[in-house]
Length: 210
Image 1 (cartoon, rainbow, N blue to C red):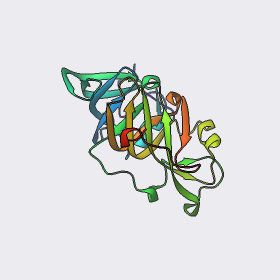
Image 2 (image 1 turned 90 degrees about the vertical axis):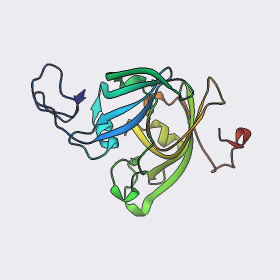
Image 3 (image 1 turned 180 degrees about the vertical axis):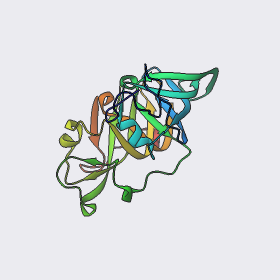
Image 4 (image 1 turned 90 degrees about the horizontal axis):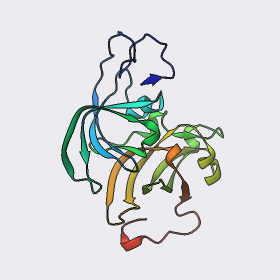
């Protein structure tokens, strides 16, 4: 794992390849990691960071997951548990936290600011449906300013967008639906997006979301 703001030779939550510097210890977060062809649960060490959002958006390359248990497509656990697994960020659709409270909007960083004003008075909650290669993802994003849909999808920062009250549905099997209080969705995996409710409600399929 390479830190954008950490000089070579210093420690990190994951350590640096080719360096004998000690790891910076921190608390572990239980996560579920989902890609187009990968689904697993495990633990990520936060190191010097206080939140998963900050750690993931400050890093690039591979994510180190401890005690990674492979899941079937429907979320059922398999018997395969790996003590350590490196996952390419480019292949991650989203990272979910299922046993934590959603972040506090007053905490500041982690929300999407498109450069049109970051005051608390301008903060809005907006509901989006986002499509990745493997899923539809419906949930709420905190956005600063009067950002339109084009501005949201054209932005490159942050790479992993925090979302709350999320429902996901597998495109390979529409019967597979999951609910999460909080996820980080990878912008590079977003292939389409729409805003829910601004131009009329989108009719849910089978009453269970998109």
